Length: 212
Image 1 (cartoon, rainbow, N blue to C red):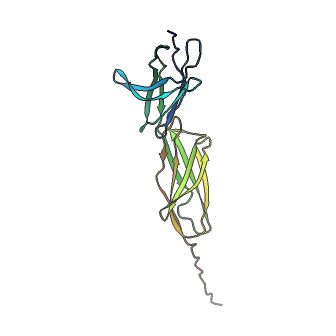
Image 2 (cartoon, helix red, strand yellow; image 1 turned 90 degrees about the vertical axis):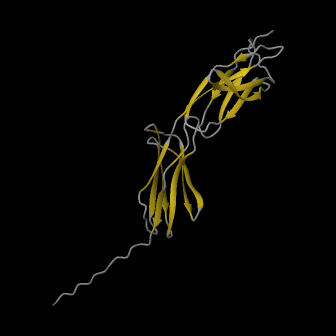
Image 3 (cartoon, one colour; image 1 turned 45 degrees about the vertical axis):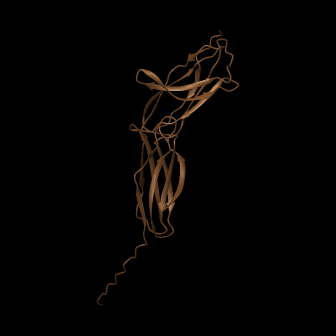
């Protein structure tokens, strides 16, 4: 009976709120791909492994799984091939991936601009006290119950994105910043920043009478 190699994962990513993917290849001992083989995705359950789902290898012997987790933490996965009359069973190496918690803060240069003025919103993304750069943050607001996405930008070396907004009329908007998660970091949303656009103030004119 030909003996199979351990299926090797070529890539593994994990997000706490969006699907992660595990990719691998099933080959024989002489590196010949095995097509049409059923691969089982597993995670640990006490002293054994729990079967999560299955997929079938393609013509190149590759397979892919998508899954999702609901919380921050470290997750362990493996894949297994049960074998058949031609090929022996085999189990892959173990992959461990950690999804870290993130925090987004939002500030505004002013929360009470007047009509015709502007305010600069600054969103800062961090994880474990370290600023996260090169990530996409979105600043959005609600006005009269309708959500408006103002901008999605990439954080700079300080983990920040900025947005300047000009206000042409009176009104009140609730602003947020959000990070949608990636392969290693959990999604997060800032607390509310309320911006109230006011009428320009009037300037009092005081007349003084001088006795000649």
